[in-house]
Each structure stands twice: as structure tokens, then as C-alpha cells.
Length: 253
Image (cartoon, rainbow, N blue to C red; front, side, top):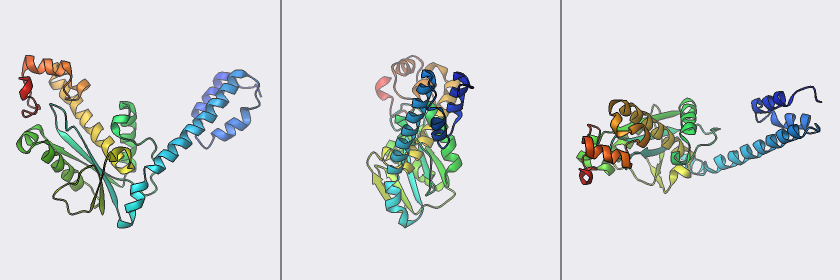
């Protein structure tokens, strides 16, 4: 039983899949070493945590199940309504019916690292996904709400698969013929809307990091265009950039 060192057993546990953990526990639960017993307990907690996450994720599919009889269900969400600079970005995602992606949630509830991980998984496993943008100029021209609707329509049009029903985060998008279901706080209640919020958030954040290299004084990589103290100070000192929303910054200039 003691042939393996604590370090080797720890590596085995960390490398084990969910399916392999019960066998790991059964094999090592009789090992009398206290360090091994702690690893066994960690394995049990890991199983419980994953089972809890599976249950949470299944609960997020309630709207997809409710409206799945209509056909292909697509989640819609946007990010970037409030910033002083940069575009508003919308995401549209159609997930497979048997979607097994864990940890999807409202993008604001996730760490940047987890969002980046989920972005890659969602874009790989989705039936289809699309992104739409509205530029700062467009926001100034038609106002942020109408620009957000426009970005959402563009995201829908970017899909390679035509959806039969849209699950939207709180809004009803004008100018769209597809049936829509607005859901308050939908990014935390629907797996499809949550997925859309993640790809929109990651897309916009990456873009603002790129803008940071062009306009480093404004610290866009950190504030993502929102009105942080350092951002506002830079705006007052250096004036607006081409990506600032003129209609949003009047009070600061």
C-alpha cells in the first residue's frame, strides 16, 4: 500500500478524471498515512463539487427545455453598455441539446481566467455562435440602446445556423422576426444566454487590451473603457481618443 510516495499519490489524484476518482478513493482509503487520508478526502470533496456543478448546470437548461419544442434555441446577450470608450458587443450562441459544458454563468460572476477557458470550450462545442458590434460613433449617432439592438441583430445574422427561438437577457430586440423570450437576469438563469455573455465579454475585453497598446495613457487593459478614476484623469489630461463615446464623456470635459 505504501509503495507510492505522497507526492506520487497527489499527482495521481490531480490527474484523475471524475470517473477515475471513485477507484482512487477505494484504493487509498485504507492507507493509514494521514497525508494520504487528506488526499482521499480532497478527492471526495472534488466529486461532490462536480456533482453540485452538474446539478447547477442542468438547472440552467430550464428555458432551453421549455422552448426546445420550437426548434433551435439561441441565447443572446451584450456587454459594454456602460463604458466611456469602446464598442458595445453582442454575442449569440446555439448550444447542442446535450451540452455538457460546466461552469457557464453570467460572465460578470466568472474570473477572467475562467471566462477565457470557457470561451475556447463554447466556441468549439457550440452548434453556432456569432458576434455583433456597434462602434462608439454608432452609439453617439443612434444612442446606446438602439446601438445595442443593432449589435444583437448583427450577432444573430453572423450565426451559420438559423435559430427558431431567441432567449434574450431582459430585452426584446426590434426588427427581428424570430420569436423572442426576454428573461430578466437571463445570463444567470439560461445556459445559452450565459454562454453568449461569455463570448461577448471575452471578445470585448480582448479588443480593449489591443486598444491599450495604442492608447496606453488610459489603461484600457485594466478598466476596459469603464470610468475608473485613472481613466477619467487621463481623459481630462489628454482629451478623448477616437474610441471614446462623445455622448458619454460630456461631463468630464
